[in-house]
Image (cartoon, rainbow over all chains, first blue to last red; front, side, top):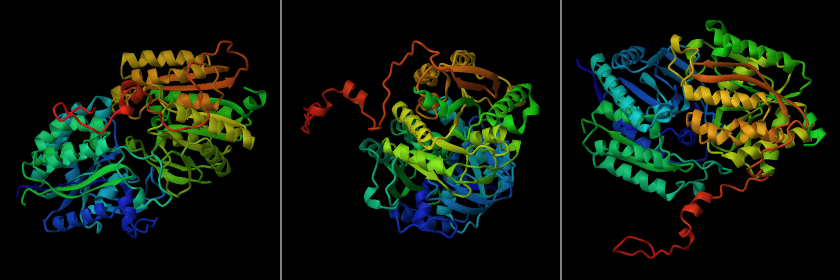
Length: 293
Length: 327
């Protein structure tokens, strides 16, 4: 039976969200925080639980491999992840099963389309916190195998247009690999929208009276992009994306959403926006695309 | 610079941080040469009488101000995100937590946001790990590592260097300053045939220009060339090339140094230079100090905003409906 992409989600990865949840895996504990986004993830989880799926595939800008795309190729990855930027909020003990055969298939299909790619085979490799946060927020039970895909540096080495080309190709390869595998996959683009941070943290990190967007321009851009998602205008979204990325220092530069939209064929149906909220000044949206719905 | 101040800083080194230098030196002649140069640096440092290694690593990016490693004995098995196929680096380092706290205090006194980091499993960056394993293998000299803030620009980085300098003076440490960074930093794809290549001729020309300055010990002149170098030969992963701002600042904002190029090779497209600086008082008679030297950080000043839109401050909230312009 032909495999398929049963859903895709924009799944932002501020470690603050896991910190706010207080799962047993995370050492630091919070009083509260970023509830709107966390409730958005709850809503996303409810929807994904209704869809039969075998594997989660996450693309993260925090596994940065400058000149090529890498795929997780070790069956079990288990360690302590400490966020290099917010170590006070995120020290998380993770334990994930990797769908190595699907990762290898993605590697082969990408290679066949001319992309520079590598398999990651080191058992001591530490998974990036971006992937972990998105995977935890989507599936805190960790009961599905995953594939972790790195982000290469095309946007910085060349420009966002080159990155779009590379990620579009990666999306096509991903789709082909999933179809050939016979599996039902959920794709996760792990990143924020606008991405200018405040460089100071409140004394109580979860003090929501200190949480707001970095500037009005970022907010306007975020709303413009969300509007396009809601209207199912993802090809127009891709046309606007380079300007959006430049104007808001958006984390879309990592390529996750471009990859996911390419794999999903640029949906023309409305996306389900579960939540929008800021985290230390950045704009974050939890958004879902489900072809069946 | 007073003699007393200069004596506190024994010297400085500019070092590359790619893991090939530590994990696979025998695979390529260029990698081996850089590894051997690190061994020379190691011998010098171990015999220098230094009691502190102060590391500024461009491989450690921070967002919340400036982070300073203060865990007394951080321990981990490190695998590089990108070059994971080279294997693991097991480490247990010795940090000078007391100095880290003094450094933090000085940063805060000078208006910077700073904090110390003391967590098991914190991911010490590849560049710092490679350097410490090669130049301080027995942890004879305690170290301190400070991050490179992704948003900070010249004034903030200069003041970070001054904060380190103040902490060195106040604690009486005899310090060696280490900056971990490539010169040109465009990587080529990780293949055997790219192992010893430079990314482009332009990158090589700029590396050679910087090496000329290094050789003459012109730290402050290089500091002031940083923006140009960033524009010409660096991938724009952060907003500027900062290591020379930090290094010159902490070492006294002067060209009064002797420079020695221990090695320069190209590794997977990047420029890998091993360079040392020793104080040479009164060497530079004509200092080229063009830019201001701030002492306290007062935030970004939106200078360009005022120049481009001088009328901005006087804008009213009334909008002309026909043109959309504000009157």
